[in-house]
Image (cartoon, rainbow, N blue to C red; front, side):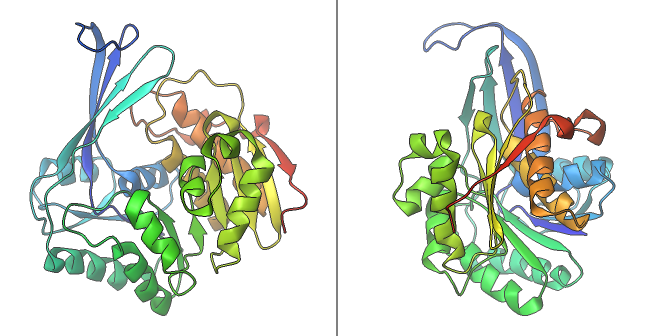
Length: 317
């Protein structure tokens, strides 16, 4: 079972344009989609599509449209009393795959709100193969919320994965090794933000990415899955490092592609696959998601894992 926490969920509304976005101009809209989402929710959606049990913990009322949509999708949703309404995030996509995101902050939370979320996760983590803490934190949450929850989860047992950014990510890194998760999933820019590297260099150079990711392992993190957009992903574990390149993909929307990549890795681990095959499955999921509109989660039948190339990276230990 995969347990997910999305402390700042959203309705993800995607607007597809018929041409390039230009400030101050009127645009023709090709389509509009809306879906209950957030990083952890997206991972739970992917789990359901792959017939892997998943529980999604979200701050929302039981009869909220957000929760009802998840239940209708077959997701075992465990709502905890929220501080306010679920926010709405807007994504604008262009024909060439360029994506512009406008993310709302969400309702401000109290310490009691956060503790309800933490307790809901801690009560179920012992039965989970993986517990995933994912996404931004709502207004009012201390930046070390994830770091503190990882510490508490380590006492419960099971594996913990974290996918976040900005101040919560920096706080987690500052709390290593006491708050070291079993898996972190930064992108190139996020990895550069706390290793001192150049984001563009890391995106373009898998070997440099592996060296930067190795710094996290030296501070107690179990493994690092670094996603590099169109350049695939790098996996670093105590046993080695690998780079995977995606199959040719016509990019439609990158929203949720990283979430799909993370799920692919977790699925590979649950299946007992070796590290290179876990990485290949992660990249297959991420590239398939990038070729779909909005935050659509790829079905297993849409994966092209056999077209993913995996190469060992030497000299990173």
